[in-house]
Structures are given as structure tokens and as C-alpha cells.
Picture (cartoon, rainbow, N blue to C red):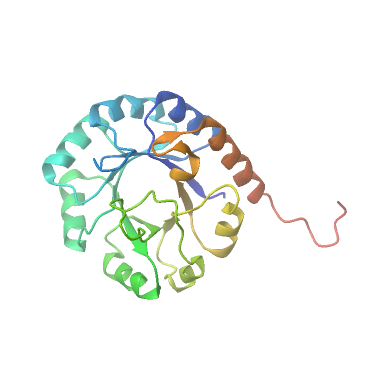
Length: 224
């Protein structure tokens, strides 16, 4: 089975439709006001309806308050919440109990020590997303277009279901899949012509590369 593909930071009907047409399994809306991909919950709710039943709708938040989540849940009705801040295991449990929505916990990675934090969330978060730590000076916890050393993923417990994020693009998606056990790939800035502006051509190029990366290896001794 091919890995899931989550296209994040969508803001227009055209981008949502193209992502769905090309086979995105998840679409993400970002509710972090400092991000160029920020979208108002009411607008995201309208776009989410275009995807309902075709892909999972993911609401991406950073240290959200209950008031934030009340509005997002009411207007967007997401299939999953992505927590991309410093939310503790206890906070994740509380959010799941209050809103009854699966949670994907994002983890920022630079070295093996960063992966030790995962242990306390196993059995609490429904899925993980591993992203590169932001560059110095960046106010964005994700969407920076930088990657980390994917070989670190060999340290991740087999119990951990995760998406890989951070610097994945059409040129390295085959390497990303081959060098990790990621059950999903998350993309945002790699598909943009400018910060927050999705490029339909780049979406097509990525999915073409992804399809090629997922082709089975030819059998040994088979003719070309």
C-alpha cells in the first residue's frame, strides 16, 4: 500500500481540487496566524466541504487554547487535529477527551535526542509527524522547507506510526520513502511559487515523482 500524502497549507478551491484529483489522502489547513499559510476557520470550513469524503481534513494548530479549538471544530469539522506546538502528553489527552477527534502530534527533530520525547506520547497521540527543527530566526514551527537527517528515523520504535515532513519534494521523495518507514509524507512549501501560494504545476510534478517512486522494483533478471 502506498504511503499517505498530506498537502498542507491549502487556501484556495483550485489547490484543494488539484490535490484531491492527484490523490492526496489528507489536506491540511493551518490555523497559526504568523504563518503565510494561515486561513480563517470559516474559509477553511468551506474548503473542507470540497474534500469531505475524499480525503481526511486536518486542522493544524500551534499550542491552541480551548477557545481556538471550539471555533475550529465547529466551523471546519476536521477528521484530525495536528498539534504542532509544545503540547504536553497531558494536554493531548485532554484535547482528545474534550473534542473526540484523533490527534497527530508533530515533533521537531535535529538529532537523536529529540526523538526521546516520542516515548511519552506513545499510546496517546494517534499518529506522529516528524519535521525539521526551524532555522534560527524562524517563527514558524513548520513549513520552512528544510529537512533533517532521515537516517535518524531508524531509532524510531516500530510502534510509532508517523508522517515525514520537512524538505520533502519531487526530487527527494524516492529517497525519503526508501530511507524511512514513514507511512505518510507531508508537504507544503515545496509546492509553492511564493510563501503561502500553492502552485498547481508543482503539485502535479510532485505526484508524478511520487507515483514513480512507488513503482515496484523490477524482478531480478527481468528484461527492460
